[in-house]
Image (tube, rainbow, N blue to C red; front, side):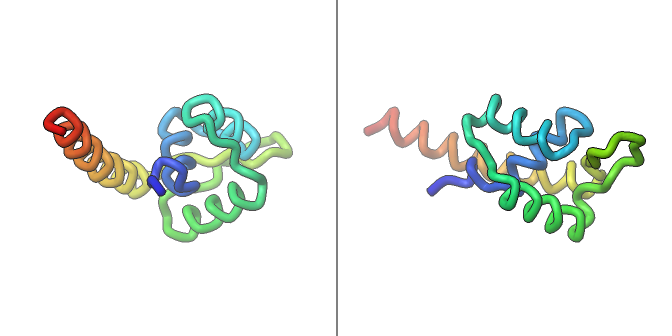
Length: 98
């Protein structure tokens, strides 16, 4: 129903807090959104985000692959958050007058 459970948005928001590997993103998203992404959903989103140029792998000596938010990803997240903010403000104003 709402975009707050969109895996793309959730991964971008998670990486806005710093570079993370997949499991760390799952834990972070669970903590800030109360949503548990399954591995298939998470890695599908990671693949799409990487292909779009919104995230990029970070060189690591660990077996886990961390990712970082690119400038284009940061801009996309800002755009998405701005749109969500507009929806939230409209809904709140309408609730106050209802």
